[in-house]
Length: 222
Image 1 (cartoon, rainbow, N blue to C red):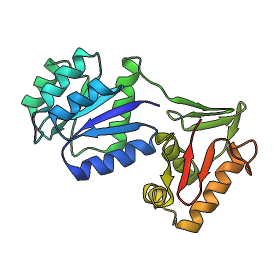
Image 2: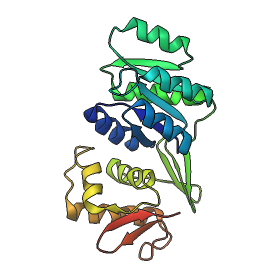
Image 3: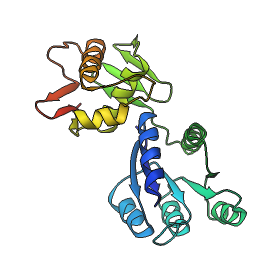
């Protein structure tokens, strides 16, 4: 699973992009300013950075310079028509840019293109006998295709993107609510967890992949 550091100070963009990119199979962390972004690069590993040039604290150019020193690819998020920022960013070694407002799926395409060019594309996740190719949207168990509904796949991706973390039922509902046009409530979530286990677990009654944390929610440990 590829990891993204989103450097952006608009809370609405942070929330919507994090949810969308997580649903596309990426692990997303965010920083709202220059200092925090640089500190996070020192503490954690990322595959690519999405950087807004205008930040409330510092600026995106300084973050880009730090990222390039570490050999990390960068895509700038720029204000529409800001030619100077685009040219400056590219001169600093940015790998691509996309102007706001942008279409989320176009951004995902740009991200994957840059990751492939940089040899950092990691799209296959292994969970015991199960493999999930988030680039192709394909799930296999013991080499055989597993056919998941759009909501089942979304649910699996949300759990994968929070691997090792207990996801409360309310948080899962928040993350998958109406994503596919389906009505999802607490009872529906129970049904989809059951269906997902039946498709990917060797023993759905004693699951190895999607664990129940009683009274709280679920988590993937593998």
